[in-house]
Length: 533
Ligand code: FAD
Ligand code: SIN
Image 1 (cartoon, rainbow, N blue to C red):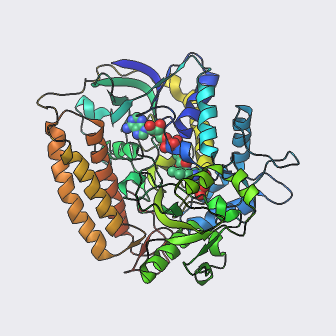
Image 2 (cartoon, protein in one colour; image 1 turned 180 degrees about the vertical axis):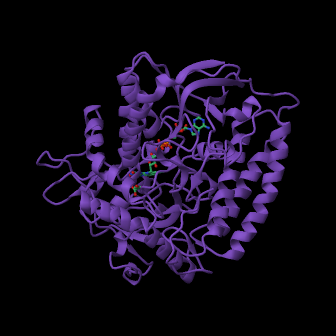
Image 3 (cartoon, rainbow, N blue to C red; image 1 turned 45 degrees about the horizontal axis):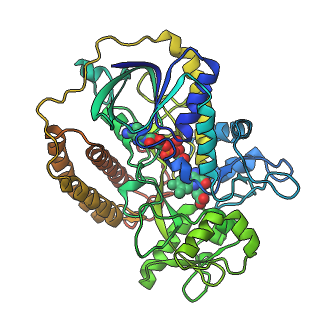
């Protein structure tokens, strides 16, 4: 048993920002941050395009950023939250700059603002095509300056601790569920530790790994969302999974798929057919820079109707020197695969990129479980609605980390450690004999989700997915109750929960809206509903 004042599960932008903000104000509080691999590995680290924020008052204003976010969100954004994030965002970005984060500047010494799909103005602050890497670097360095922040690497959070573990009945309609910390598997000692916390924050990121093709690193298995679901916390909008239109097509297959940033289209690259013909004007007047749901669906439709494996991104008309300066990683990656973006078009395919739904939080970042907050991609804060606007995710994490830190600082002294938390029960389990049972199930899960719950859905496909997932669920629960815990088994179990939630929410939505498109209900309903689970 280990006591910590604040337990933060996750060391991406959400978790580290929050830890720093609490540590700055209260050197007396112990903050423990967990990461299931090393502190540099997260979705944050791979962010390319940048952070959207109203920066140039001569061209941009809050109203425009709010309107773009609401337009992308297709009727399901919470307007109060959109206003909060857009208005508080620029101050939070300035703090990141003060903490040592570098963003590119132009020749005049002003921040070089980029453009991405769905934005009506240039407002994306970026560091080459490595914005996330730079943010993660600056946060790790800043966190290291506080002696009251401990980051535990290779610590896998398995489950939240609530009254349930104290033997009390907790149901999905209970209003007084409280969180007392979490059980975590120390991957070095292979023991499960009881982490007793006065306040807990889930900042575990996304779940792109439930699909075969995803831009998300292998850590993105939806653990936090699944843990909160098991603890009977509220989730919403799980049907809205964002597919990024332009992952690099690599016939050799790689996990994750390499992203070709939307900022490349913001820089002037154009989507084309193999015959070098533009096609996006058939789908939206904003063409290659329409919001992601529209572009990803258009590419999917063109690929299916033409029977091809990828579409093309043409950069050949762009200034090479500027391109290489802005997008060195993308350029190098293409060259490494024998694709010279200035001699040929880049082959691109859509790939799962971002889960817009997740743990339902309020304007302060509180979940429906007392003493439990959630921050970052694992949440449904109300900002994204049915489709996230590009580069709004890093901004959301910055804004909510600040709000949560304020609330933790205000309330933590009212809460003490809970006595008598039980240790994890490992009785009657044995070491896994056949790892293939887990790895094969993960493959099956990805196939099910990619074939039946992807960009285009239908009642028949969703029904089939549910049936297949049921079987996987039963087999995995059997393994879980008899086998010693491993991260792979926990991740499989979590991914099955997420897959089930996405499929169930998709089946409940009898319309097409934002990222959810079904051939059985191709139109939008007049009555707008949020799917709460
Ligand atoms: P993450 O950064 O994913 O961090 C999650 C943390 O939780 C990790 O430390 C992980 O180890 C830990 N964790 C997870 N499960 C457990 C567990 N069971 N136990 C212990 N620890 C756990 N957004 C933008 O706004 N702009 C962009 O330009 C942009 N580009 C992107 C490009 C790519 C390729 C990708 C994949 C995403 C991009 N996004 C972008 C989205 C954005 O990067 C993420 O939404 C955001 O970084 C998520 O931050 P986070 O802190 O919530 O989670
Ligand atoms: C990108 O660079 O295209 C990703 C931006 C985002 O996901 O917000």
